[in-house]
Length: 112
Ligand code: FES
Image (tube, rainbow, N blue to C red; front, side, top):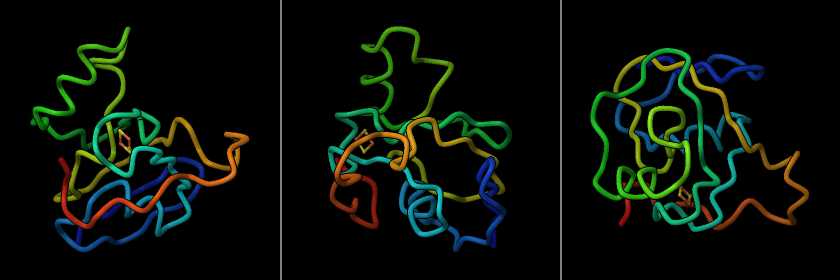
């Protein structure tokens, strides 16, 4: 199983194909996912320290291209599946957000 290291949290084994946002959620990474994983809100954003996937969904690319200074710096964890070892930093953790809830849980597969 691939290893997912969450900066400041820990290192975990994650089943291949797990949606990154849900792997973070299930292992104490506290990602926000305010749009429910539909590449609309960017609150699930992460920085890759190692293991950044080379490919991107069309929805992620479109969203990052339309957000200032995002492409090449952040990735949307709702648009990525864990298929190899990764080390990421959650950039907008729920406990620091001041929000009442992180958003509804994204589906197990990538949407839209
Ligand atoms: S863009 Fe909203 S949860 Fe990923």
